[in-house]
Image (cartoon, rainbow, N blue to C red; front, side, top):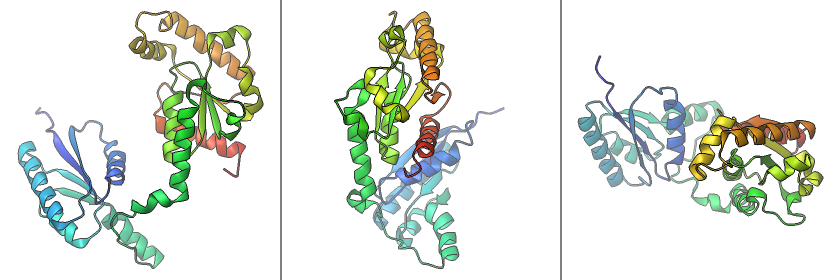
Length: 277
């Protein structure tokens, strides 16, 4: 049985390429056995650039021995035609999705290049920037009197259970102001939440993690320490879960979940507790 060849996958856009890449990753995730070489080509906003891309695609096909896959969000027919000079499987966002929407809505799309260029002026964009600044300013228990009142959610859990990346993802993707607060051995000895959190109990959401995975993560940060030992990780996780159960804090095990899955659960919890969110 021969090995599956490595196939080049291009994400090509007249803008940053994030939309094309997001679409492509969502589809390619269904084929974990595939061997892929991924190339993002942003800002293809002229025919000449499209023709240059076509050349790159042809070269990749020759090198790989199989035709490349191209996820494209180009909108101008001339640039699309230039790109299609190469032999590839083209998956075009506008061709596949915008056309059917035009038919269903009975409207013509703008087919404008760089529709996200003016996003910096939008209220959603500004909300995300504010949320990112908030998450960074309230990371790992850093807070000042009264500021937690502005949080949409406060993540709690032991150190290295995923609170910081989740806070930043919620901020960047959804404009959620997420603070995070570590539960530490002193909290377990007192057998109660840190005092700053009591006034915001309804905003709390807990993250936990398998002790074995936590020990592995902590070993990378502080090898051969008590902090990273499996025994200590088991103690902290057990104590944190008991504390969250007693305080009636909803919580989620992050061990086998992606940051997207974790965030989706948290968003649902926020919306259930605050229908106007």
